[in-house]
Image (cartoon, rainbow over all chains, first blue to last red; front, side, top):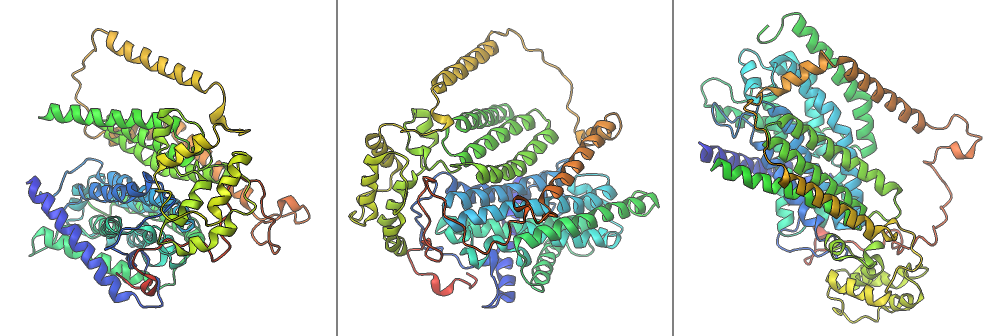
Length: 300
Length: 312
């Protein structure tokens, strides 16, 4: 059981990484910013003369650990879950922060002007997305009456939450793009910074960054599938097939939608978040509360 | 099996907590100090999770990662030497040296940049990087660093090991001439001994206490719901009051950050758009960065300039 779950998690992680690259390939043109999918030098190590020799290598390891920890509570099917924690969704929000921590460590530890600037932008982006992301979770949690991922999936047996809370889904897609540093919010990895943290990575650290950044997107899409698209539930096909199809579908949708608008700077991201997304999130919470009072939704 | 895992996890978490606290107090880099404090609190969060208080543990992790990253950002903003580049060259106790390991003193670092065969641009700019560079360590070492900056260093003479540089420094300056840092106050050894004594007393109390009361209460698996009910029921006034306080704080920040409404007062003018080139800060004891556009770019050993914007 544990081995099967671990293999499933590993397979999903690798498949997600491959699919991320494929989709980014489809959308990226020469004149567009590649962001976290930019070219990295995997064959050669990189020696930075002033680098902090503790913080720089710690960065990718911490980030990948955060992604791996988040995979634990993702339900890939009935019974196919690492551990059904009672506070699973809160756990996901918390451990994905380790990715931000890893990026900040590596940016500062590289001790180049570009790296330190990338560190600042990473932290600013964290300030931008945490509150609206939490509000996007709150609507679902209110309806499901639980923080457990399995309970959230169970609550959507009849109707997916994307139908009941379209505003929340929209909010989740935008903040999920911020959280995974994809298209309009790729300022920390902009070409003007030489790729930020990726620009100062080479060899094993570039490989770990590639997997960790693809894994963040996979976790964001998988959590979105659990929150709004019913997770592994669906007719005919087995649970894991539905879960993977929804995850990869949401991933492609997010990447594609993100490429439709021009990239936003960190300041614009912050303004968007605090002036538009947070009020929208509060409105969404109010709407969901009204729906629950009206008796709409599961268990009502 | 389970007990062995518990003991192992307890050992790991408490080690992270104690070592993080020790590193926080002894490292020379403010950034590292914040990260060490964060690690210490994450270790404590691990202890909470071992005690089945998983909600408190996760709350702790969330608060400290997000909060400390922002705090570190402000620290970098206002601190004189957030990276510890200046203080790393001082005389350090062994513990401080260990937790500051790998920090590169700034003036030596620029010369180390030349040794790297990959950074060609760094070499070409190294000559003017040292001009007007106020040395923090006195005149004797000033000349020493000039030699490095002049490009007279043979390649590879500086191996790039931090220990070498530390040794260099201690031979070179032998003191901290006129540095006004809290790290060099004379009470530092006293504080260290006091902390060690407090630690010994605490550990002694741990061993001397004869019997620990053992409760057989089973932890509540749905503690999040209980905490939520308490917050919204019994402690609602305190909870909402805290929310109101934070709202007032946000208002205050917006009020302070707004563009000036009194443009005649120069101190309140918006600082965003300044036409004139600001005057360079002298005497900041840091090596000036290279001129705009000439910043030595980190380079791979292969060439990657041709395909920077392509997907790998």
